[in-house]
Amino acid sequence: MPISISDLPENEEQRLAELHALLILETPPEERFDRITRITKALFDVPIAVISLIDRDRLWFKSNVGLPVNEIGRQDSCCSHAILQEDIFVLEDASIDPRFKDSALVLGPPNICFYAGAQLTMPSGHNMGTLCIIDHEPRKFSSQQQSLLADLSKIVVGELAGSAAQSV
Image 1: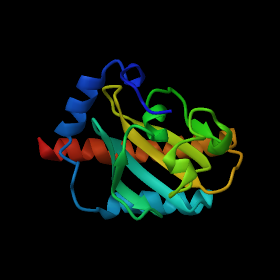
Image 2: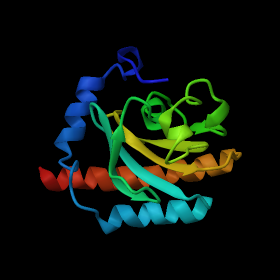
Image 3: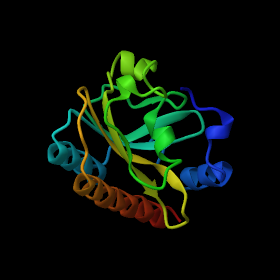
Image 4: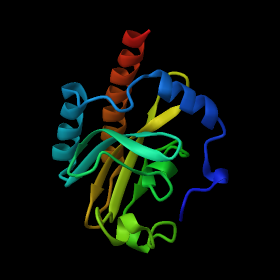
């Protein structure tokens, strides 16, 4: 199900202003972020791990392992749903979820079946994006695994906050 205006965070304009103030969109890959995605991919034994930042109309990937692209449209993305949640957003099988079963991202490349996304929540409370993992097969995701993904997302937030401090 595509994202509609009613599916945007209440604080969308402030969230976008903070995202743009980070001055991180369109920057080259950085080892400090790539290290986190590599660890995340290995820890959860998934083919895809991504640090996504959600801009107005797109998801831009600060780091990704397993995807051949640097951005996708926001309208069909799992990450856009994830930033609306307070907890880890988990889809054990997107192919049977009514919100996603007809999505091009499920039916074709990258063939999302399993998705788990931890919000990148800045100290302001704005969710900038997600640290997410994707698999081509359905799978369960335990509360312990959710806690680990949340811990890793906090490391990403620390790096993003460090970037913001350096750009001031």
